[in-house]
Length: 97
DNA sequence: CCCATGACTAGAC
DNA sequence: GGTCTAGCCATGG
Image 1: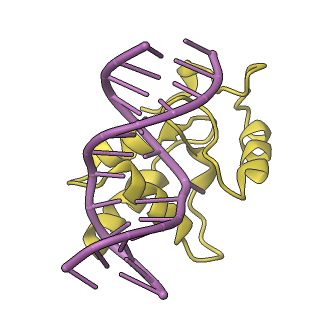
Image 2 (image 1 turned 180 degrees about the vertical axis):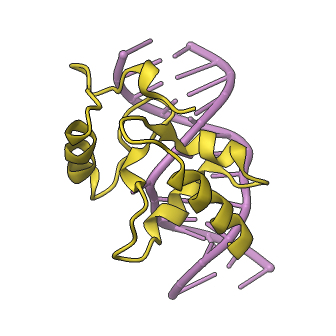
């Protein structure tokens, strides 16, 4: 993907506050042309050792996306106060912006 | 070039 | 609420 688009995606990601979450679609909508799939790809391709809050990105249905790091993602969100309901969904008022 | 593959989504049942 | 489907579009074979 275009480096400029990736940069937009990661810049927005870096602005998601602790204790809040956002969705692939919302990030995509804030960029100049990215789609949810591209946002997902950008996260998947993040280099090891980065400090971006990749775990604050969830799906439009407020569930964790289907990927290998979902368990760690849930732990890290809970660790900063994001609670899940009995069906595994994040409360709507945790969404950013 | 064609085809399959996704950390997805909106809409239809 | 859940499941399916078509759309999505860069990427790699």
